[in-house]
Each structure stands twice: as C-alpha cells, then as structure tokens.
Image 1 (cartoon, rainbow, N blue to C red):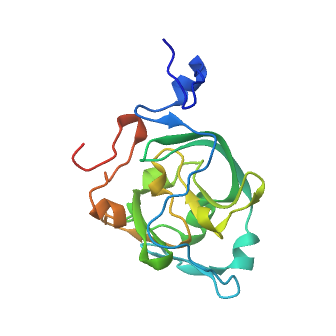
Image 2 (image 1 turned 45 degrees about the horizontal axis):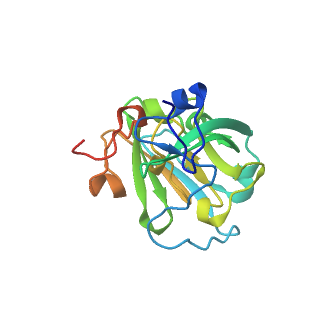
Length: 201
C-alpha cells in the first residue's frame, strides 16, 4: 500500500523515492528556530570570511549582491521530520567565496556564524558541493525574515539545521568544532538518508 501524505493523499512512486526515511511531505514552509527573529540593518550588515584562508575578507550587502548569481532547485528536509520538495533558491554559490578566500591546505571544516551567536558546522567536502548556496531569494522573492533574511546558507544534502539562517560569517578550521545544536545532542553529520538526527542514533 502506498504511503500517505498528511490529509489522506497518496504519494506516487517518484515522490516516495525522494522522501528520506522518517519524513513526511508538506507543501508549507514551517518556521523553526531558536530565539527571536533578528532585526537586520542592511546599511551596517556584512558577511565575514576568515580562519584557515589566504585572503580573509568582509562583504557589505551591495558587495555581496554584486557577485555572480546562481539558482538551485532542491528538496529540503528538516530534522523535525517535514520535507518540502522542489524548492527554488537564488544567491551566490559558496564556491565563489571559496575561490575568493583561497583556502589553505590545512582547512578541513567550516563553522557557520549567524546572528545571536548561533553556529553550525560542516566538513569542507559537504560545503563545497556545487548545489550549496548563499541564498537571499526563495521562490523568486527575497527571503522573508523568519526564513533567514537577508542571507542563509542552503545545504540540500543535510538536514536543514545545517543551513544556518541569518548568516554573518564562515570560519574555516583545521579541526571540527560542533555548533549550537550539535553541542545539544544533534548528530554532527546530519545525513538524512541515514536518519542521523541525534548523536546517539
């Protein structure tokens, strides 16, 4: 018997194939985050890139917006078990910033820094995928504040907490450093096909 969507609709074979274990499909875009939605002043906002790089730098909002643009079409999956298929994002490919920074050979990990002290970590082999995006647009419109405006990372191959909202910096590291949720028991790797939700899974 086919799996069911909430509301009683059936999933076709293609949709079931795209849905990771333990997930349900939603057409909405649930809003989940720790703390309040920050207020951001684009006149003073910047994005910092530093750590194990040859050329650390900061970008103002106009400088970021002037970088080459890219679109990504992806499915997204939240650790709280919802999945949203066929989402469209626009922004700057993370590879563009990696080229600008010039990673040192010792760089192995990145720690994302966001507003209000939030952090989350990734290995470089995940960050450097061609579908990882610094996104400022969702569904053809500027990001809404509750979804991370003005800027968030989008990492389609990991549970969505690894795609930090309200991004303010990328710190490149020689050794891994767990972020906010990882320190509170979330899985360090967060591969949704393996259901890596919590550190004791």
